[in-house]
Image 1 (cartoon, one colour):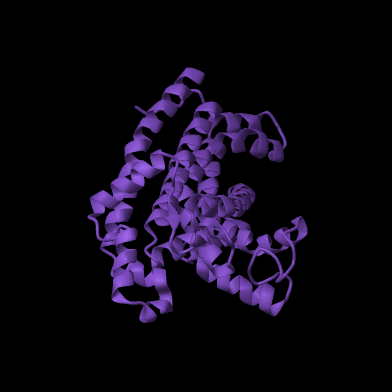
Image 2 (image 1 turned 90 degrees about the vertical axis):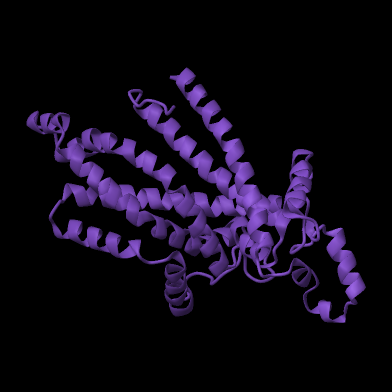
Length: 324
């Protein structure tokens, strides 16, 4: 098994390199086609008091007059040399921007994904167990309804109810204004965005667990367990649920792109100081160096999530063949 996993990792790594190069080059091409002028974003309102000569000098210094391919080459050689460049929008080294924001994004996405998995396993199992009952109909109806609700709508509704209406949780930010970063402050401010992110990702997982459980409950080993007189809870939790987990693990890996997209929207609404929120700032400012790195990080997260899901499927069921 370990040899098969090793071959899988090598194949996926070899596949990831050209994918990341193409994605990074695509960012430069799209940014060059953008109607926004990076120099305008660089100066802001100070542009109106700046001479044309100074603007031309800054444009030349930033390399904006060079062809896209040349700009990409300079950026790529710098990255391979350990220099990620300087963010024009944050006026900081890109490495520093990533290092400051990546931990908060990982905290939010990991908490949101964990909540989505717990919600899916609980509601999907109960719905399948009580197939046709009111719990099943309620869970299925809510799941289908939430599939079409964007995360930012859930975020705004949760702010209206839990922050502005009930006053239970803070509206936005990492801590209260002027308060130091502490476990209590972060946990209080994390609760609402993580809950929104988890709920926004859960409908597909809940419905998938329900369907997998229904299939598992009709299999011979589960029917045999019932025939032996085992308690219904033991039949469901010890015989049916483990069988349904294999496709569920694979689905979690497939949901990583949606998780990344949802994190971007949730961080923006809640002013969460994570990496995803910086994507919006970099995109509107046509910040090539930062936007390219953030896009690569998001792409790498999707590829790594898919790889981990496939490895987990192999570990859970050795009969699963590796790709290629």
